[in-house]
Image (cartoon, rainbow, N blue to C red; front, side, top):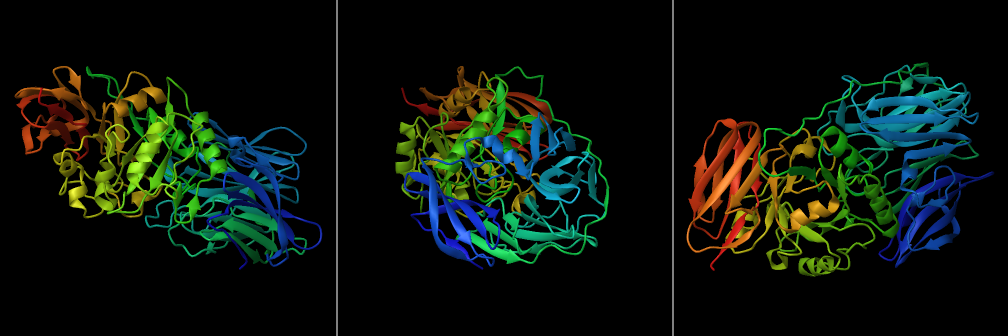
Length: 623
């Protein structure tokens, strides 16, 4: 298999094949070297091998991606939701919780191919005799019609009159309940053979597949990668050559992989009319209304997509958070450099563009962010960086490998950071700074890292790196929690819930749903962590909120109130010596007060169903 190797000096991404008259094809690749990106155009022979030297064009500081249709650069982040082929056009539109796939044939007009309460993305289109095949992925279950976690490819045929059909045969191997490392089937590409058979290419979470659709129905999916955990490209570009064979180009861990396949064969598949309006929708759980405390906003500010080692498009985390879960804010934190995958200036511009498109101040806030992936303990571990807005460059672990230096550089940007899964990869105590790193993530799909032996469990055995032992050394930081989801059910067997996106939530005491208000709450530690439930919690000492530093002389009275999503089994005040006071209300609502004398205190809430919440500590100093 031909491979165009990437190097530390030249990172390659987003291959796009273009057929040519006669033999071979052209391969267009986005290349990043130094502070410039460009398009490299390779000439390929019929077997995919490179002929001659590449031609470099379109030099500039950043190239977001490709325009729909012809391989030319674009600075429109919405281009990922469109595709064109020989006069046909398909687009995915998101209207609140609903996704709509719309096709326009060469003759004009718009025809809805698929519409549902759920998330669709990554459309592709390939012409065929009498019409065109359309592919896309979505998360709506075929058995219940409800939106779920795993995404799978769907294909439809649209004729010249705009009528929509689907294969009569069921799709082989489709399983939205897979629980291992390999899940889902997304980001499709289509190739149509001379006899009407179709080859479908797409990626799972950690593999790439070919699946044939012909007169016999769907074949089993055939893996064409090694299936190892890694950061592959999203799309496999596939084209028919003049000889009839198929060439496929995709980004692997080493560079651009090119593979030749025989032409699709076996005859055109049987078709039946397709249902266009599908699904039954979903419902969001509203925030509790019987709450007398300060306004609390909830969000998940650590999750991953197929732009690193997760699944799904960059739009999906924001759509899911806002319209499915009813969250108030969200962030996408893909690894900026991990397992051979790097986010260069063009891809970073794209991710920022998507984040800005979903930002709706006052209604829903998005935060520009990424994950800095340092070496595990005794290295600095992993940290997420939260920026005040777009336009700031990534501080890469490839240039800045030490946690302290990272914190210093992002402070200059007005950003903040925090470590996560600290008992697994380390907390980086030497790199801690209470201003640049004001919060630590203590719960996620990887488990709970408040203190060793907690009931939620955890990955890793670095017990001295947990939050409470670190507080006991004198470090000061607030608590947050996030899913750290990569879009996999049960986080491939590592987490306690089927839905990995509800394994951790950050709650902030903020006056408005804006990026600025949420980041300010994090800086001031006016925030707390939950295990995924929207538990309302307020803790005060003499009117000072959680996260405060107070000068005191002697004992203080701590006031806590909580409103759970179900009965609260226990509410506890935790100090360096352990639990100093507690109550067992056995009801959803509780108000609680107790006197403590300690270096810090935080409140821990445990519901009857096992869900938990932890306030950020209040710290005490001698006057």
